[in-house]
Length: 259
Image (cartoon, rainbow, N blue to C red; front, side, top):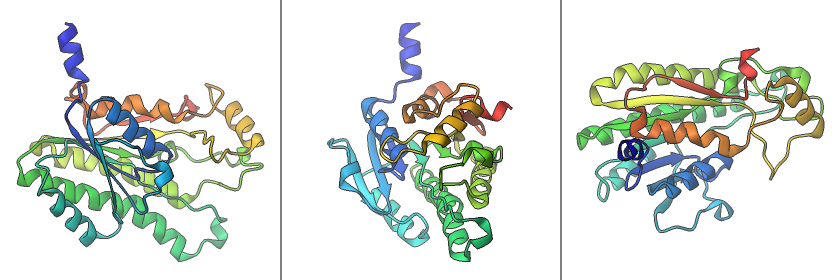
Protein backbone atom coordinates (compact mmCIF):
# COMPACT_ATOMS: atom_id res chain seq x y z
CA UNK A 1 0.00 0.00 0.00
CA UNK A 2 2.81 2.45 0.86
CA UNK A 3 4.44 1.87 -2.54
CA UNK A 4 1.10 2.40 -4.26
CA UNK A 5 0.44 5.67 -2.43
CA UNK A 6 3.94 7.00 -3.02
CA UNK A 7 3.71 6.20 -6.73
CA UNK A 8 0.41 8.10 -7.02
CA UNK A 9 2.02 11.41 -6.14
CA UNK A 10 5.51 10.69 -7.45
CA UNK A 11 6.55 13.50 -9.84
CA UNK A 12 10.27 12.83 -9.67
CA UNK A 13 12.05 13.09 -13.02
CA UNK A 14 9.05 14.54 -14.85
CA UNK A 15 9.12 17.81 -16.78
CA UNK A 16 6.81 20.77 -16.18
CA UNK A 17 6.37 23.98 -18.14
CA UNK A 18 5.02 26.90 -16.10
CA UNK A 19 3.90 30.20 -17.63
CA UNK A 20 4.03 33.37 -15.57
CA UNK A 21 6.87 31.66 -13.76
CA UNK A 22 8.24 34.66 -11.89
CA UNK A 23 4.98 35.97 -10.45
CA UNK A 24 3.75 35.30 -6.93
CA UNK A 25 1.89 32.09 -7.74
CA UNK A 26 4.22 31.08 -10.57
CA UNK A 27 7.23 31.22 -8.28
CA UNK A 28 5.49 29.02 -5.70
CA UNK A 29 4.46 26.51 -8.38
CA UNK A 30 8.01 26.25 -9.74
CA UNK A 31 9.39 25.91 -6.22
CA UNK A 32 6.98 23.08 -5.36
CA UNK A 33 7.68 21.21 -8.60
CA UNK A 34 11.41 21.40 -7.97
CA UNK A 35 10.90 20.15 -4.41
CA UNK A 36 8.96 17.23 -5.90
CA UNK A 37 11.95 16.23 -8.03
CA UNK A 38 10.72 17.64 -11.33
CA UNK A 39 12.63 19.47 -14.01
CA UNK A 40 11.01 22.84 -14.68
CA UNK A 41 10.84 25.16 -17.67
CA UNK A 42 9.68 28.60 -16.59
CA UNK A 43 8.54 31.21 -19.08
CA UNK A 44 7.52 34.80 -18.56
CA UNK A 45 7.35 37.98 -20.59
CA UNK A 46 10.24 39.38 -18.59
CA UNK A 47 12.41 37.34 -16.26
CA UNK A 48 12.93 39.27 -13.05
CA UNK A 49 16.17 38.13 -11.43
CA UNK A 50 14.70 38.75 -7.99
CA UNK A 51 12.09 36.06 -8.74
CA UNK A 52 14.44 33.45 -10.20
CA UNK A 53 15.01 30.19 -8.32
CA UNK A 54 18.64 29.14 -8.28
CA UNK A 55 18.61 25.46 -9.27
CA UNK A 56 20.19 23.37 -11.99
CA UNK A 57 16.78 21.77 -12.55
CA UNK A 58 15.01 24.90 -13.79
CA UNK A 59 15.48 26.90 -16.97
CA UNK A 60 13.90 30.30 -17.62
CA UNK A 61 12.95 31.76 -20.99
CA UNK A 62 11.46 35.10 -21.97
CA UNK A 63 8.46 34.34 -24.20
CA UNK A 64 5.38 36.39 -25.04
CA UNK A 65 2.52 33.90 -24.93
CA UNK A 66 0.37 36.31 -26.96
CA UNK A 67 2.66 35.74 -29.93
CA UNK A 68 1.73 32.49 -31.69
CA UNK A 69 4.86 32.48 -33.88
CA UNK A 70 7.18 33.11 -30.92
CA UNK A 71 5.58 30.27 -28.99
CA UNK A 72 5.86 27.91 -31.95
CA UNK A 73 9.57 28.75 -32.30
CA UNK A 74 10.06 28.21 -28.57
CA UNK A 75 8.48 24.75 -28.65
CA UNK A 76 10.47 23.84 -31.75
CA UNK A 77 13.69 24.71 -29.92
CA UNK A 78 12.60 22.65 -26.92
CA UNK A 79 12.07 19.62 -29.14
CA UNK A 80 15.83 19.38 -29.76
CA UNK A 81 16.46 18.47 -26.12
CA UNK A 82 13.11 17.36 -24.68
CA UNK A 83 10.76 14.68 -26.02
CA UNK A 84 7.93 15.19 -23.57
CA UNK A 85 6.54 17.85 -21.25
CA UNK A 86 4.57 15.95 -18.66
CA UNK A 87 2.72 18.95 -17.23
CA UNK A 88 1.79 22.35 -18.63
CA UNK A 89 0.62 24.92 -16.09
CA UNK A 90 -1.04 27.92 -17.73
CA UNK A 91 -0.55 30.36 -14.88
CA UNK A 92 0.22 33.62 -16.72
CA UNK A 93 -2.53 36.18 -16.28
CA UNK A 94 -3.11 39.92 -16.01
CA UNK A 95 -5.84 42.31 -14.94
CA UNK A 96 -6.70 46.02 -15.14
CA UNK A 97 -8.13 48.21 -12.41
CA UNK A 98 -9.45 51.46 -13.89
CA UNK A 99 -13.22 52.02 -13.60
CA UNK A 100 -15.02 50.18 -16.38
CA UNK A 101 -16.60 53.46 -17.50
CA UNK A 102 -13.09 54.67 -18.35
CA UNK A 103 -11.61 51.43 -19.66
CA UNK A 104 -9.87 51.93 -23.01
CA UNK A 105 -9.99 49.28 -25.70
CA UNK A 106 -6.26 48.66 -25.24
CA UNK A 107 -6.78 47.56 -21.62
CA UNK A 108 -9.63 45.23 -22.56
CA UNK A 109 -7.63 43.70 -25.41
CA UNK A 110 -4.53 43.24 -23.24
CA UNK A 111 -6.39 41.13 -20.67
CA UNK A 112 -8.15 39.12 -23.37
CA UNK A 113 -4.91 38.55 -25.27
CA UNK A 114 -2.89 37.34 -22.28
CA UNK A 115 -5.51 35.42 -20.33
CA UNK A 116 -7.50 33.77 -23.11
CA UNK A 117 -5.53 33.95 -26.33
CA UNK A 118 -2.23 33.26 -24.58
CA UNK A 119 -3.65 30.25 -22.76
CA UNK A 120 -5.08 28.92 -26.02
CA UNK A 121 -1.77 29.34 -27.87
CA UNK A 122 0.06 27.50 -25.08
CA UNK A 123 -2.41 24.61 -25.20
CA UNK A 124 -2.24 24.50 -29.00
CA UNK A 125 1.55 24.33 -29.09
CA UNK A 126 1.74 21.91 -26.18
CA UNK A 127 -0.66 19.46 -27.81
CA UNK A 128 1.22 19.60 -31.12
CA UNK A 129 4.49 19.06 -29.24
CA UNK A 130 3.15 16.02 -27.39
CA UNK A 131 1.52 14.51 -30.48
CA UNK A 132 4.76 14.59 -32.46
CA UNK A 133 6.36 12.43 -29.80
CA UNK A 134 3.16 10.46 -29.08
CA UNK A 135 3.26 11.36 -25.41
CA UNK A 136 0.41 11.81 -22.97
CA UNK A 137 0.33 14.68 -20.51
CA UNK A 138 -1.55 16.97 -18.18
CA UNK A 139 -2.65 20.58 -18.51
CA UNK A 140 -3.50 22.65 -15.44
CA UNK A 141 -5.05 26.04 -16.14
CA UNK A 142 -5.23 28.76 -13.51
CA UNK A 143 -8.63 30.45 -13.54
CA UNK A 144 -10.23 32.34 -10.63
CA UNK A 145 -13.24 32.17 -8.36
CA UNK A 146 -14.19 35.41 -10.11
CA UNK A 147 -14.82 33.24 -13.15
CA UNK A 148 -17.58 31.63 -11.08
CA UNK A 149 -18.92 34.47 -8.92
CA UNK A 150 -18.96 38.24 -9.19
CA UNK A 151 -16.81 40.39 -6.89
CA UNK A 152 -18.48 41.99 -3.89
CA UNK A 153 -17.49 45.60 -4.48
CA UNK A 154 -18.46 46.56 -0.92
CA UNK A 155 -15.14 45.11 0.29
CA UNK A 156 -12.97 47.44 -1.85
CA UNK A 157 -13.16 50.43 0.48
CA UNK A 158 -9.41 51.24 0.52
CA UNK A 159 -8.13 49.11 -2.34
CA UNK A 160 -7.73 50.48 -5.86
CA UNK A 161 -7.30 46.99 -7.32
CA UNK A 162 -11.02 46.52 -7.94
CA UNK A 163 -11.65 43.37 -9.93
CA UNK A 164 -12.64 43.98 -13.54
CA UNK A 165 -15.39 42.55 -15.72
CA UNK A 166 -12.90 41.54 -18.41
CA UNK A 167 -10.73 39.64 -15.90
CA UNK A 168 -13.73 37.66 -14.67
CA UNK A 169 -14.89 37.03 -18.23
CA UNK A 170 -11.50 35.65 -19.25
CA UNK A 171 -11.30 33.43 -16.19
CA UNK A 172 -14.79 32.07 -16.90
CA UNK A 173 -13.51 31.44 -20.42
CA UNK A 174 -10.54 29.49 -19.08
CA UNK A 175 -12.87 27.27 -17.04
CA UNK A 176 -14.95 26.54 -20.14
CA UNK A 177 -11.83 26.08 -22.27
CA UNK A 178 -10.61 23.50 -19.75
CA UNK A 179 -13.83 21.54 -20.16
CA UNK A 180 -13.70 21.82 -23.94
CA UNK A 181 -10.14 20.53 -24.20
CA UNK A 182 -10.72 17.83 -21.57
CA UNK A 183 -13.23 16.30 -23.98
CA UNK A 184 -11.32 17.12 -27.15
CA UNK A 185 -7.98 15.74 -25.93
CA UNK A 186 -9.19 12.63 -24.11
CA UNK A 187 -8.16 10.42 -27.05
CA UNK A 188 -4.67 11.89 -26.82
CA UNK A 189 -4.55 10.86 -23.16
CA UNK A 190 -4.04 14.49 -22.17
CA UNK A 191 -5.95 15.55 -19.06
CA UNK A 192 -7.10 19.14 -18.76
CA UNK A 193 -8.20 20.68 -15.49
CA UNK A 194 -8.10 24.04 -13.78
CA UNK A 195 -7.95 25.58 -10.36
CA UNK A 196 -9.81 28.73 -9.34
CA UNK A 197 -8.00 30.53 -6.53
CA UNK A 198 -9.76 32.95 -4.24
CA UNK A 199 -8.03 36.09 -3.03
CA UNK A 200 -4.37 35.47 -2.23
CA UNK A 201 -2.60 37.70 0.27
CA UNK A 202 0.51 39.31 -1.17
CA UNK A 203 3.03 40.15 1.56
CA UNK A 204 5.27 41.99 -0.95
CA UNK A 205 2.46 44.29 -2.07
CA UNK A 206 -0.19 44.00 0.66
CA UNK A 207 -3.82 44.75 0.06
CA UNK A 208 -5.36 47.55 2.14
CA UNK A 209 -6.13 46.99 5.82
CA UNK A 210 -9.83 47.71 5.36
CA UNK A 211 -9.95 45.40 2.36
CA UNK A 212 -8.34 42.61 4.38
CA UNK A 213 -10.89 43.05 7.16
CA UNK A 214 -13.81 43.24 4.73
CA UNK A 215 -12.63 40.22 2.77
CA UNK A 216 -12.09 38.22 5.94
CA UNK A 217 -15.61 39.07 7.13
CA UNK A 218 -17.01 38.01 3.75
CA UNK A 219 -15.07 34.72 3.61
CA UNK A 220 -16.32 31.72 5.66
CA UNK A 221 -12.71 30.88 6.64
CA UNK A 222 -12.26 34.52 7.72
CA UNK A 223 -9.02 35.26 5.86
CA UNK A 224 -7.35 35.52 2.49
CA UNK A 225 -5.44 32.55 1.11
CA UNK A 226 -1.72 31.94 1.41
CA UNK A 227 -0.09 31.30 -1.95
CA UNK A 228 1.11 27.90 -0.72
CA UNK A 229 -2.50 26.81 -0.28
CA UNK A 230 -2.90 26.64 -4.07
CA UNK A 231 -0.12 24.12 -4.45
CA UNK A 232 -1.79 20.93 -3.20
CA UNK A 233 -4.43 20.96 -5.93
CA UNK A 234 -1.82 21.68 -8.62
CA UNK A 235 0.37 18.80 -7.46
CA UNK A 236 -2.65 16.50 -7.37
CA UNK A 237 -3.76 17.43 -10.89
CA UNK A 238 -0.18 17.05 -12.14
CA UNK A 239 0.26 13.58 -10.68
CA UNK A 240 -0.97 10.06 -11.44
CA UNK A 241 -3.34 10.43 -8.50
CA UNK A 242 -5.52 12.41 -10.93
CA UNK A 243 -5.33 9.81 -13.72
CA UNK A 244 -9.16 9.73 -14.00
CA UNK A 245 -9.73 13.42 -13.32
CA UNK A 246 -10.29 15.70 -16.28
CA UNK A 247 -12.46 18.68 -17.13
CA UNK A 248 -12.70 19.75 -13.50
CA UNK A 249 -12.41 23.14 -11.83
CA UNK A 250 -11.16 23.02 -8.24
CA UNK A 251 -12.20 26.20 -6.41
CA UNK A 252 -9.80 27.12 -3.60
CA UNK A 253 -11.43 30.13 -1.98
CA UNK A 254 -11.99 29.38 1.70
CA UNK A 255 -15.68 28.83 0.97
CA UNK A 256 -16.32 32.28 -0.49
CA UNK A 257 -18.22 30.93 -3.52
CA UNK A 258 -20.53 28.92 -1.25
CA UNK A 259 -22.54 31.97 -0.18
